[in-house]
Length: 396
Image: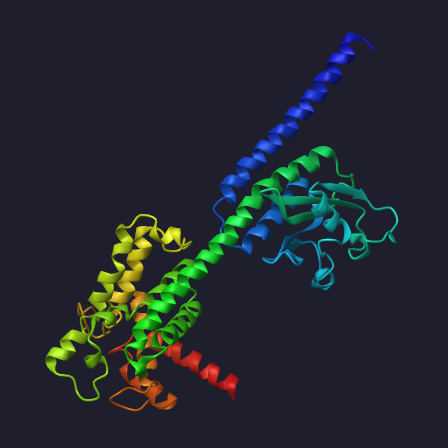
């Protein structure tokens, strides 16, 4: 072989290596930019498997993750399969079973070309038609947390070493992201539980309103969903609703539980609870990273925390301008406050209070209709009534 031929082969080899290195660097950059901020534990596996399928141009694939107890490994994201085939995966990949189990035990990629369709302990038994299979372990702190499984390139070629390296780089990067997403979900649940406990503690001050904040939150979020609010806005609405009466912690119990008519002074005290609520929640705006520390990305920016405060402050405004504390009118009242106001009024009417019995569903609905356009946003009232009627039909 002459010197020129050797140089050409060497140049071709170097070109391939540079091409593979470029692909890997491009992947790392793309993943860090596009997926680095994904903290949804359900969405992230789907994003990962889509990325793996796209970069190798394969026909199908799925991602398996261990559950929290590491007792089983289950499908969390898949593409290219029917629901019937996915159902067959359930219980198929325990840590000691099949190629995925072998991949987990060895903590190494496994590439196999299936020639005999009757090979045992193989995913080819379940996924008919696949001839080339790649299993890549997802490792976090030297412990496997899942497996990326890919089947058949569209080109018909087998999987090569550069393919394995590329997907292994993806698996390595996203393993940390998956763990962060799980931690985020846990912290978010802890935060919401803490907020719910605070809300319940406030409701406990008055046995007649026990559970009120949780019910108002349920009604308000359902309204928000029907109004097609974004996930971000729904998160803000949820927190504003559950905290809407937090200011009542500063109202004396004897006033909250008084069976008779309130005096002017007592009523003035009650009317201060929205502003008192604002004073309680307001420090979140100035405390850098408070919400992020609890895993709440929906309200991490200051403006989102301010939206929660606005929802709390104005939930007793009236559509006709005769509410409090600012006397806002019509759509000048923030949407979140208008939603909470309807949910709050309905639950107040259908709950027994120290000074009256609970109204029936029919009476409460009629009262909402009567006050639409005066106390409440008529469009929100109409939608709320529609939701209640649909729920009643389902119960009947």
